[in-house]
Every structure is written in structure tokens, then in C-alpha cells.
Amino acid sequence: MRLLHFLDLLGTLTFAISGAFRAVKHELDLLGVIVLAVATGVGGGIMRDVLLGSTPPAALVDQAYVLTCVLGAALVFLLAPKIAQRWDYVMVADAIGLAVFAALGAAKAEERGAVPLTIVMMAMITASGGGLVRDLLVQEIPAVLKSDFYATAALLGGAGFVALGRLGVGAGPRLAGTMAVTLFLRALAMKYGMRLPHVHSLPLTPSQLTRQRKHSPPPD
Image (cartoon, rainbow, N blue to C red; front, top):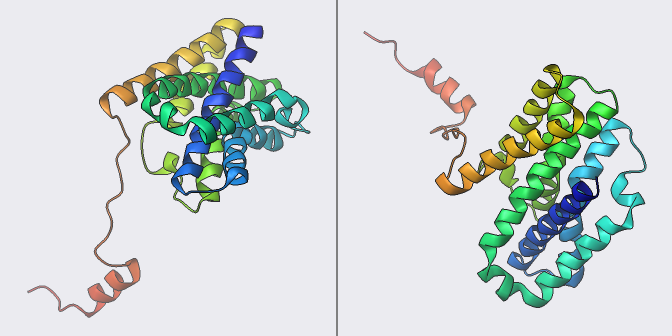
């Protein structure tokens, strides 16, 4: 399990770097960079633990998580241009973190006796909840709701965790399988620009369209 813990911290670091770069985009000060880094790095895990009634959340018990986020914030604050030039490496590490978080979220939910649907949801929340908090803090529409095949990859990874459990697969292979599914889907999305269908905007509001229908002349 040491490898999982290392990968967990690696995912936390890459998520924290992602959050810190969002702070750079909005030209926040050092505290703002740290806040967004921490929110992105551990936000999903805290949301999961609170929803499952596992308190205090693991990120608040093991200080390594918050310290890792602070490290990510410091790296971005000091080395943002150099890190940006190697963003492809950061994205690869981010995909690994997504896969690890999805697997750990699903396993934690099952450990707490959650039903299959909740297990799948916790995989997604653990993996993408931090990004959701990050975007809300800077008053943006959460990226996981409008672009990229990100939360969906974690959702399907969680579904794979449940499916493998129904087949009687052991704990270790289930975690590995969940990570493999999530990472594979995320890699495909990164390479081919996969995304879910978008809702197209209406020409008028629903109320206006209703009034237009009521007042339009009947067809001949």
C-alpha cells in the first residue's frame, strides 16, 4: 500500500499545481495561490469523507496531504514559466492522480458500506471534487461540467470497480483495474479531444418561447 500512498500524494501534488495555476490566471497573491492549491489537491477527498461520515477527513489527519499542496503552490509561485513549458508532463501526472483518486474513492466508499451507486459517485467526487471547489472559488463554471472527458472517466472507473467486485475479483486487482480503466479513458480523451455532447443554447428563454407559441397565429 506504500505505492498507493505515494501515487495518492503524487496526484495531490499535480492537482495542487493545477489549482495554483488557476490562481496565476486570476493574478491572486501568495495566499490565494496556496488556498486554490489546497482546495484542488484535497477538496475531493474531504468532500468524500464528509459525505461518507468518515470524520475528521483523512487530509486533515495526515498533514502530508496539505504540506504536499503547499509544496505545489510554492513550485508554481516560484517556477510557473518553467512548469508551464512542461505542462504535458503535468497532465500525464494529473491523469495518474485522477485514476488513483477514483480507485481510492471507490474503495473508501465500499469500506464504509456504501451501495454500488454511491461507490461510483464517490469515485467521481474524490477525483474531480477538488477541481469543482477550485472553479467555484474563482467564480467560474466548473470545468468538469462543461469541458473535457474528466469526471466521466472517474465515473466509469468507479463503475468498473463495482463490476469487478460482482465478478469476485480481489481487492488489489480491483484497485488496479479501476485505475487502468480511468487512466485509459483519460488518456484517450487527452489524445483525441473526447468530450460529452453539449446542450445548445435556446434562441429565447423557455418563458419567452411559451408566450411566442401562445400568441402565434394557428397554422393554416
